[in-house]
Image (tube, rainbow, N blue to C red; front, side):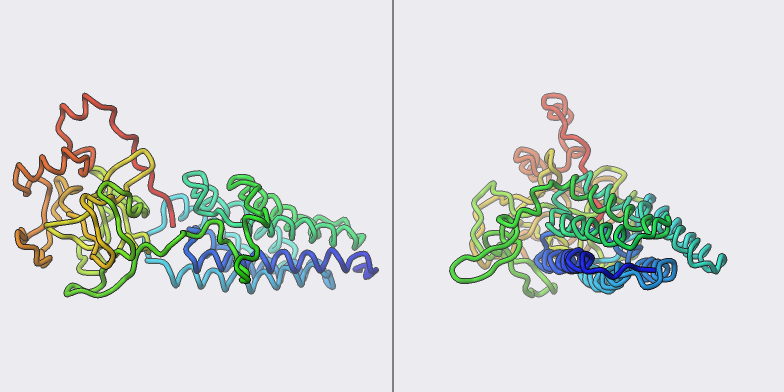
Length: 392
């Protein structure tokens, strides 16, 4: 039986507000493209969260903390829908597949057991598994989840735990889910940095207006998406100087035999990054940058990943483009070119299809993939490390 004395009320209110605020802040960061959540983890959470909340309520009837979990369940589903609306579909990685299969197995066993307690324990066991894709993603690049939401969720879990301790019930079903959620949320918070919950960095007033997450927001919108004769295109909203970085290309890595063979137009968003691997679509601005046989930008493979840089001054309003052939080798892929450049090659193919002097032009400016450089270049200078491509 739940103890309903007044000391519970402040902690209950803190738990509700912290969890709800966490989802609001995270969704705000998602809309502003300040976070790159792992879709596999959020899909698992949204699929299991109602089961977690309902089984917790069944194991702990009348518990005030059950309301916190139900509110979180609804907010989690809203965030998941927002993530999938802004994402391009790509096959899950092996670890994501294993995690989703394990969580599905837990839900299946729940149906077989027909027991609220064991159903709850099985789903609780699946929670750390569901966090694995996010831990992997943050381990590769912690900026992908750099949001105060993780700190707010951790605070909310602590408040929920305090509410649970005031009930007088010491059964494992009353604490297992809360403790697991607390440890998982706290682990991500520690990985991205505890300072992310600092209110000075997260929100405040300026020029009479209230702003959220402005610390991590770009100072200006660098691009605009418009239309050209081919369809969608990316245009510079500000000027870029020669050699200036424009945008980082991101996306999940695929083996060459995993890349769909029949792709046309907007569905073809794959970039070769090694002789055996391609970078898949990211669902972001880099997917929309078109090819040109007379480009104003080029891809540079660096220690921090694949970065598009300006190869000449780019004026505001000018379409940004790069030469697709500068990453292609031993590939069967080719495309009829309609870039309308004066020296259009008509067909885009492997790097070897470029004129020798054009190949040397790109090599001299370090605008080709490492496997396309001259052998003497590779022995004279250290080769960049393997390109790290994270889950979206």
